[in-house]
Length: 354
Image (cartoon, rainbow, N blue to C red; front, top):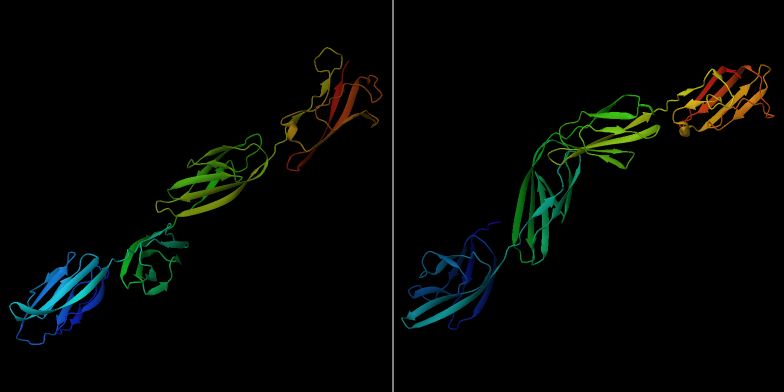
């Protein structure tokens, strides 16, 4: 609360009493009231007709008194000049002491290199006349206040307010800006694949609370989580760390999950209808993830015996006309495009047995 210097309030005296008014603020240090009696030899006396807790400092039989007003409210102070013990003339002053406003403010987290919002939450029933913020030697006259801190250290933030009655209050808070959090991570294995999709994220940030997001939706809160990717391609991983001050730092990295094409074609088959090894074709892992597939079988003269773009289709040992192909060696070619657009070509031979 702001304390003021002593006020001197003069009261005149006449043959008839008359009313005067004065206005002060709660907690004003000391108010001096001084009267001008018509004869300095006459006895004088001060008295609160309505005191409301007023505190008189010193004697009440002098031509001036000092008063403290610890409480807001209305007061009536009377000064009397005696011509004789039962004959006096009085003058009164009506006094109003206004309640002070209460300065207060809050802020979000105060972090280096961030714009901090200081919110004025002062209680000002009489209406706000001025709102002044101070940081060091800088002053800003505004209701709410935004400030960006660029250097570490301690800062005193002060808010001074004045209401429409001229009463004031201030609030000052000290903020310590420490080294901000530094966030980083790496992952293992460095080259995950669809066959080995489990990835460990190694957090090398400062101590704090960690929040991970994968592709913008999956959320992990472990300090060093393990994550299983369900598809090949580029995946965005973001790590956000909140330190003990509530300050935040974050980093994003891209993880490429490669598609491993693993397939197998036998070197012989026997289409004899016994249910064992009756067809010839690709046996592969995660076939449904391939973008394209082209498989062809040729005889020794280069004629196509079988062709398919569906990995579930197998050569049954017949020609394209539906007749049994002769026993012997046949060549084959295979072209695959995985889900990332990577193309693989393979060639080989198979023996048809009957």
